[in-house]
Image 1 (tube, rainbow, N blue to C red):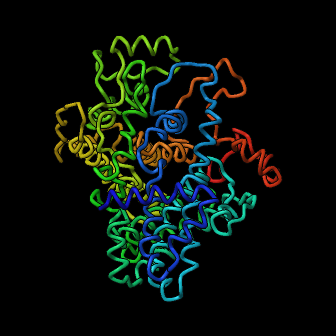
Image 2: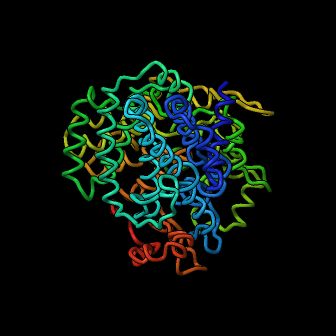
Image 3: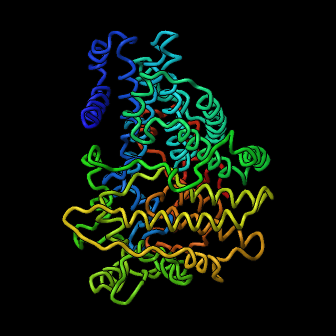
Amino acid sequence: MKQIILNLSISIILLMSFSSCMDKIEDDYTDPDTSTVGYMGNLFTTMLLNNRIMPTYWDYATFVTGVTAKYSQFIGIGITSKMYVPSSDYNEDRWEAYYTGGIVNQYREIEKTYSNLTATKQVEQEVYLQIAKVVYYDQTSQVIDLWGDIPFSEAGSLNTTNTLTKAKFDDADSIYTTIIDGLKTINTFLDTVSVTSSVSTSLATQDILLGGDLKMWRRYANSLRLRLLMRISNVSESVAETAVTEMLNDTTTYPLVESNDQNILLEVNSSNSSFNSSGLESGLTDAATSNGPIAPEYLLEDVMVASNDPRTPVFWNKSSAGYVGLPIGSTTTTAESMLSNNLVSTIDSATFIKNINVPGVVFTAAEVSFLKAEAYERWGLGTASTAYETGISQSIDFYFDLNSSAVYSGYSATAETAPTTSEIASFIAGDSIAYSGTTTEKLAKIYTQKWLNFFILQAGQAWAEYRRTGYPALTFYDDPSYTSALQPPTRLLYPSTETTYNSTNYAAVSSEDTRDTKIFWAQ
């Protein structure tokens, strides 16, 4: 039954891509009072089945490896011409994935469907609108983190009015404020809403992320709000400190993702694996060498091996020379030679490359713990060392669970033995990561461990946090062949579709459309 519903969802979004089909959709759903429970649910499911939430080939092959993982230094790269200039076509595709690929257009369709309901039905089905808004806000914040100011308030007019309007660019800071305030309102709504049995049954099926568990949606909304508040905390510290203090002092009102069994994961299973298309294997594997991405020297050797990190064997394949990363500044010839002679480590096959059970990671308890640790350290709200150590332990458990629960097709591997509690405690007490030193040194350790925890599965968050905090202290080799882009950018350039077809509105932000302009929250 779930497969039928998912197939219907995909069919609906394809229909909505063509304005000529709008009348047919309206004919198919002529009676909102009898059909919109299913229709709202289908629209919501399709919103979740997005190729930037699911671990899809296209996302990893065109954007993660080319932008976010590269600029977060999760993969080793040899020196090539324009190595810090991302593909304009792939960047535009990422932009369109947000606007027309199932987020903005789908959310606007949900809004339109909701507005056409009777007052009674609106009360009954508002829950769909509100949880869809959480996903919408999450994805919006991620697009802001890549570009800065974006079309927001006027975006998606075709879906709501059947009229194509060229949308203005909204200020990124103000959108963040809208999202942060909106998430608080959503949490309150979900805490008090009464859901009918028909909607509850529909939610349990259509909500392929959290199975209709509204307490979990509150955890998602509040954890996202905590993330965004900490992200603006260096530029709007008083605002962030006040709101974060309220949240962390009252976790009954503001429940968070606190443990790994509460992680927000879009699971890959028999119902949606064909949509996923084994994303990591096909998206990360080099067709010529059949290997995954090469390990960078800093992450593997300086951070993980140097501290005896127990996650090392579930992150990396061991080379014939041990756990070895590609040195910064290596030529492509050196990289290829080391790879062909098995002298450099690659991303672990068993945990990531061959594992068709890797989920889309939306939020983890480890991230929440690291966010708490930063807030506690900066503002004295709690015991920072406990939150920091909890985050490391949760990260270790998460990745070993990913390794042990792996599912393969035409491949076999033995799960790695997870470290014991005492072994984890010994690692955390090690000189290089122990929670000690000045406040600056402690924050650097929090930021570095959070960056490591994000890894390839949340490379976008890692790149955002690196630009916000400046940690870890990554070194990027200058591209000697292209002086206009010696180093990675601080933001992406707007796609040509905006500069060409939305030129009047683009003119208002054109002066900021440079690769070196910082996102408003960046240091």
